[in-house]
Amino acid sequence: MIDIKKVGIRTFTVRLVNKLAEIFAQQRRQLRQQLDSPVFDDLNSKCLIVFGISVIIYCGLVSFSDFKSTLEGIRLYKLGSIYLYTIKTILIFNLAVFIWRLLLVSKYKPVKGCSDKELPKCTVIVPAYNEGKQVLVTLQSVVASDYPAEKVQIIAVDDGSKDDTFKWMETACNLMPGRIECIRQPVNRGKREALFEGIMRSKGRIIVTIDSDSTIEPNTLRNMVSPFIKDKTVGAVAGNVRVLNASQGVIPKMLDVSFAYSFEFLRASQSMVDTVFCTPGALSAYRKDVVMKNLKTWLNQTFMGRKATIGEDRAMTNMILNCGWAVRFQSNAIVYTNVPTEYKGLCKMFLRWARSNVRETLAMGKFIFKKFRSTSAIGARVNFITSCLSLVFQKALIGMVVACMFFAPQVYLSQLMFGTVIASTAPAVFYVLRRKDSDLLWAYAYGLFWLAGLWWITPWSLLTARNGKWLTRELPQERPVPTGKRDLRLNLGTAA
Image: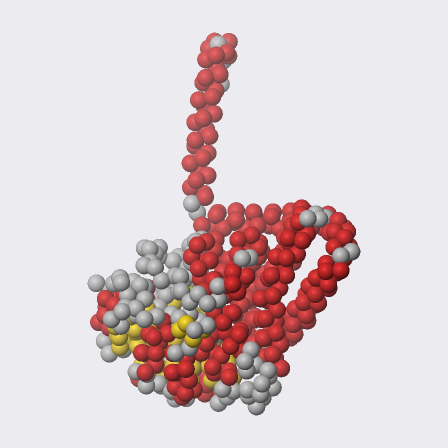
């Protein structure tokens, strides 16, 4: 303890300040060490989300009466009354569809894997462009499958990469001799062309496509092919996509929860009515004879006078559905894929997907209300109408935001965030029921993140649907090695 009488007030003050600075510096070092811990960072993030949700719910409840008064003011205008009635109708319809999907998902069960004897020969195609070393990991995961080796043909297609992707393909061939066929396109022609090359060289009855930034579990191939054997009406199967790099930032964490809802709820419900809308590029399977009948049409597809260079997965799904085949989802066929870790990359990916959705929704509209198959198509049509409404509903919400800003902006914004939290509860609850994990909180963060930074994706995709640029084909940066509970690491050898 410092004696003030002996040292004087001035000296005492200087020493006290220095001592406090030393203590503060020590505490800061300790705090930084704690913050560097993924567990501490995750815990603090979730605490922040809980706090944010609490504030939003409180503000939403407090301002609800003011919000009702604001709506009454809007109803005084004829156009406003029509507008509010339309949105109310859409909300009621979506709620009814959600309940219907809940019933479907409660009855959904994936097809169990067939025995080795029952399994047909299949061809796995892995297209790659500027993927680097990751393509080796992808091919290793395919070779490590429990599918009989003599019944699997693996084709890797380098689509004119500008980096060392083909060298890593050659490394894979050397590490696993006789298991992989490598094709090198002299120039970049696009993913559709790369898949076409693989399909033309395929020998299997079933064609499986896997993205080069993805890895599969050992039983994935078996589970992907089995629905074709158990049901002769199945023309395509969609795999269950999960996030590989979930430990690499906030965006992958949010997408991991979003993907769970998108695949294990939405696609599972679509599967129950034989109409999964999109077999994802990360993992899909097709009956070869069905693909071959539509291959040239798919390859040369155009949109508004331009050759289609995006949405090859959704386009293939549409063509198979149009031919009367069922498209199913296999929740037990799991693939882990890398997703963007930064906002800019995420926007590019979502914009490409949204433009593809606009294009293929228009294409589906040409046959969905016709007798395109012998079995019931009511479920397919309900899902189609819901998909169309989701495109319109985005614009309706934007219009309401603009309108309410003139009446009570603070009230409406609080209600908008309150509604987003309520809507995010569905994927959050579904996630915790399936995964038993506190990561369900990221569903709320994702909902608010979409509201703040991604709301423009859908309306902009409607205005720019003709743009067919891939957007995410730049040379990849050095990727950190994924770590965490959802990472899948496979190693069949050490690459030179």
